[in-house]
Length: 314
Image (cartoon, rainbow, N blue to C red; front, side, top):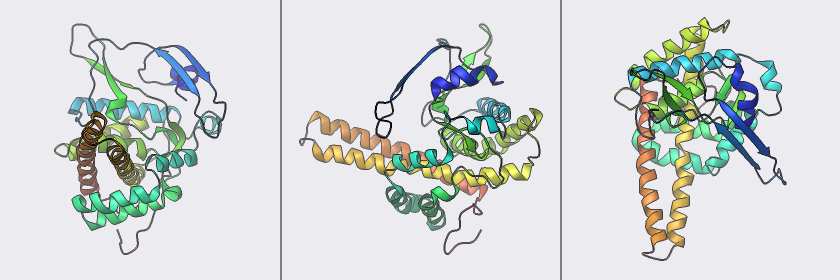
């Protein structure tokens, strides 16, 4: 998919991107069980490139630049029948199955929501997220409105860089990277919800979301998206928040794998120590992500999603 992006989409998008110099794809011998191989040679963005690492937070200017860039990206292929029909793009169903596999399965993801997220966020958030995970095939990547955009389900700041555009001025532009997994069948709210959940600290979440959504919407409309109201965007965004919460629940499977390595390694061995260190680091990282997700829910109160939760109303 990334090779196809640079070969077929890069020059059609009104956003800054690295130049693509070479791509190659080797299809899998066994498509049912193998992914195959691909290579992309792209432009180096410079020693003065900036990034926001995993667990860090965007500043106000970076947030504005991301929102504007995503607005331009989404408007470029707004409801594009061409991309939705392209065999190279992942379908919504394929992306949902990939999410579930990264969780281990729905039961493993739901268990993390039912324990860790219940402990940190309370019963209502946990009940909604458990239901979201267990019914993911019914609602994920669908919008409250039926608008579709070119979307990465993994849009976080470690897939974004800022390239310096003037050698003597402190002036940067936002570059979206890592186009390995994307679909043309997603609601506009999902990229945005994932970005805010994983890229903004609890302390600045409300301001970043409030301003970022406005910048995104103004950019989207200015670049030609038709018939999409501010109310439409807010409904789609709130629905997408439960996708971001579902991604937080990858932690259950990842931590279980770490525990498996701990148990399988000789007591006191380097392998066991490395697995324990990884387990500790992942626990801390995902705990912070969960707190950001909970804050996003508190800011938005998105309790009217496309799925219904037994025992709760909006």
